[in-house]
Each structure stands twice: as C-alpha cells, then as structure tokens.
Image (cartoon, rainbow, N blue to C red; front, side, top):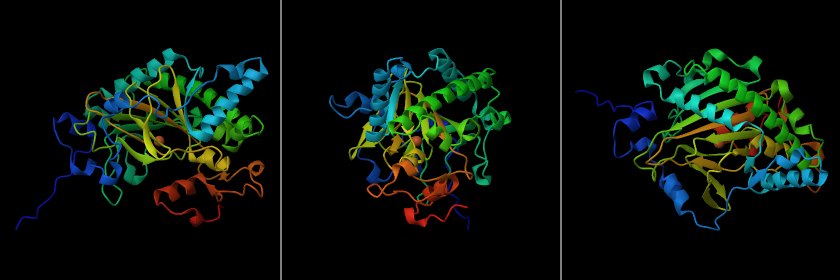
Length: 362
Ligand SMILES: [Fe+2]
C-alpha cells in the first residue's frame, strides 16, 4: 500500500503567492487567539480612527542647534517616546533622501529577479548560516509560517562584512548599501547619544556599552511581503520584540507594522521622509526597563507588495555582559534583568525561558 506523502508547501512565499491561489495553506493560518486585530494592512490604516494612538514623531534637527534649550527639548522628546512607546518615527535623521531612494531601488531590483537567480543566494538556516536569501522554517511546534521572504546580511563594520554573501545584482547594490550603512552608523551614534543624555548619563555611555564603532554590528534584513489573498488570517512576521539595541526600519511606503500599545494592536502610519526606530531588548535591559522594547508584528495586504528594510544594531554576541547600568540601579529601583550575554539573551528568547533561567555569563 502506498504511503501518503503530504506535499510540503513551496519554500518561497513569492512562488506561492504567484501561483494564483485564493486561499492560503494552513501552515500560514494564524491561530484564533491572534486574529482579533488581523486584517488587510491597507484597509486597517484607512479605517483607523482619528484619535487612536499614534507612533510618536521626533524631529532630530534641534539636537545640533547651538541653542542648548532647543537641544535639551529634543532629547526630552526622544526620551519620552522611548519610555512610552519604545518606537518612533525620526525626521531630519541626516541620511540623504536620495540615498534612501537608491537603497529602495536596489533592494527592489534584487527581489524583481527571477526566483532561480535569487535561489543562488539561498541561506542554510539548518546549518546556522543565516546570511542570504531565505524564508522562515517551520521550526516551531505548530509548524507556523510567515507570509514573507527575506534577504539578510551584515552591513557594518565594513571589515566584518562578507561581501560574497551580498547580492551581485543589481550591480549598484554593494556600493549603495555600503554608503547607506556608513550614513546610518552616524545616526546610530546620534540616537545613542541622545538616549544616554535622556537617562542622565554621559553622551558616549550607551555607544561604549554596546561595543562602539568597532564591535557594534549592523545586520540588515530586507523583508519581501507578497500580496496575500487572505490577509485577515496571515502574518508577515509574527509578534516579537527585537533583541537588538536599536532597529531602524524603512519601507516602500506600504503600511504593515502593527504595535501592541495600551493592550491593543495599533497600526503605524507611513510617515514620508522618516526612519522608524525601535528600542530593542538590549536597551531595555541597559536602561533597567526605563526604555521600552515594544511587541510588534507585520500585517500583509491583498493589493500591494510590501518591502521593508530593517537594520538591527547588535552588541557583540559573547564579549559584553548585558545588565542594567549601575547608574540606573538603586534600592528604590533594583535591577530588573539578570546579567546575560547577547548570545544567551537570544537563546533565552528562542526557548521562551523565564528570567531566572540565565546561567552566569562567563
Ligand atoms: Fe522586529
């Protein structure tokens, strides 16, 4: 008797979406408990009511003002956004908008290539090599998959990058991405300075605690979300908080990011010329919980392909022990997080262990 072999879903969401299906395979259907605020992202934005909570917008222009008062007000605005939401749109970030457009073009240019060419860059998650082109593996108990494909690679510091893992097409990809990484690194320093000042610390404190110019790593993940026939049942990326210190996000102006704020899922509007920034777990730990790492996820939609560029700024995996900064710990405000290396933190999240399960860092 022939054994029934259940076909595996296609490994790339782009091929699945392009096959003209009208319902999505069950691996992509979210459980009932996650569905209350799911929906077509474009419709959700259109229907979001006036007066519903909105991600704060912080204009960084005054941080460089010779007027100290203006500069302080700018720090306060960022600090309040980091405490209340842990996510904000920043304006006047200093990256030329023309460079951002070029980054969008080369990223889109790669995903516009035929799948067979993209497959030449496929990563091998099972063996731990995560740089390159990929899709989520069904490595959780429920076998749940996400409605997206992605490209992942390290973009800074330049001496730690491996250009052989970057797309060779479009030909401008490498040059544009290197230039963007350099410019964005400047924004990282500025944000960390402002966030240090917001905690009453020296300007360079957080930058140093995270490894500084030589060791803080910037990893880029380009997320490609194909059109989805049943966006009310699927997620592009499932709910999580970022492990990074800061995450920067750019999009092709198609909405999708949803944030869990005030016990509700709230969609982020698209703000032209801004970068969206998340405070990640690492800064939540260093700040002893003053800055917040917010839970978020990505919705998909029926009409438009969404592309986003997320840059995760991470401390080195083993050499730095992450714990609340001494200056922020007192009898009245005891340490809320046990010490851990970044690698231990990632493991901890992967296996959803409790806070007390941390071994002592070496
Ligand atoms: Fe995220």
